Amino acid sequence: MLGYRPMKSTRCAMACVAVACVIWILAGFGVSSAQAPPAYRVDPFWPKPLPHKWIMQQVPTLAVGPDDHVWVLNRSRQIRPDENGASTTPPRTDCCIAGPSVLEFDPAGNLIQGWGGPGYVPNWPGEQTINIDRESNVWISGTGRGETILKFSRAGKLLKDFGHVPPPIPRGQTPPPLVENNQQTDALISGVAGFDFDEDARELYIADTEFINKRILVFDMDTGAFKRGWGGKGVPLAEIPNERVAPYDTSGPPPDIKEFNVLHCIHLSNDGRVYVCDRGNDRVQVFTKQGTFVTQFWIHPSTPARGTECGGPGSDKYGPCGTVFNLAFSPAPRQDFVFVADGANDKVWIVNRTSGMVAGSIGDNGRMAGMFHFIDGIASDSKGNIYTGEVETGKRVQKFVPVRK
Image (cartoon, rainbow, N blue to C red):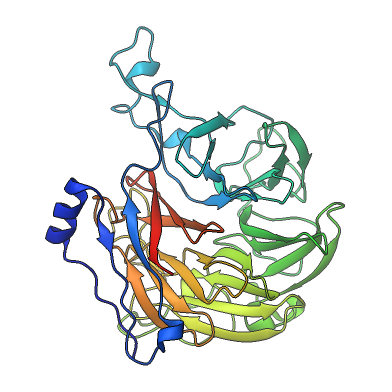
């Protein structure tokens, strides 16, 4: 079995105080030297401080554009009273003010621009996923009721509302309970958990809502027309049951079931495979673009993935459940490794993309440079750098630089 050896926290603390905490990822036995995972060190000075007394809040996702600029989705509404003293009239404290919801950084960590947030345009979503197309347009989704995907220019001009929302609730009426319907394709019942593009085919892949439906949907990227969809292990939409997945005994690993549960991301690899974050089952499922099931692999399956003990940001329960919050690939063209952001164990797992075996990890639960508290987002650039985002009270992004590729 492949393993990892994290740096002890005391040694990491000493290194961070000096210059940068070096996180060495060691290949476990069974991995050839040609397939040995890369090693990384954290850059504790990335990004540079924000201007205008802005402060960063929860970062559920981030994305890298074609120019290697890093786009951060910032949940500005999560600012606490003890953080926004400079926003009062008169200012109660010297700092701070909630930064905009979209922040663009260059590779050196300089803030290029910031825009967006509640009220910026009609139907601004509760921030969940950001993605950048090859023209550097910015796409944003939310997972709230009736939320969808908005497309902006790089400068923040609204270009398109993807739509596909349920009929509005008449004013004064109590919204009916959400009902799961995996066969409905003209509306996204409760937002978008994650999405990605196939720009050559002009197709938009959507991992449907986190906690309602259990399916992947593919739409025309320009017209919004529905094209195809599937459920866990590639089952047709018609065969997906419209009830919640049953709980399981958390003293053992999640069962190998067909259904997705708590979808959290979707990404397309260079070789045309579709990788789906099935957080509620501690696994990644892989498909062809047509929805044919290819393979699956589990990430630390002894971690509870769902059930009554699961908490979330601000919860008084044990904490978040599930290990597959998001993922990114190592550099093109081969993309030998998958980097999986695990918000329950607060690690980035390095997975061999061919075997599906864990070859190492980065980080652990903590607040020092190179550690994580509720990691949620992850992205990589063309140079092999990894960028991570943290929610709950982590509220930051970090950059990890390869020291061995």
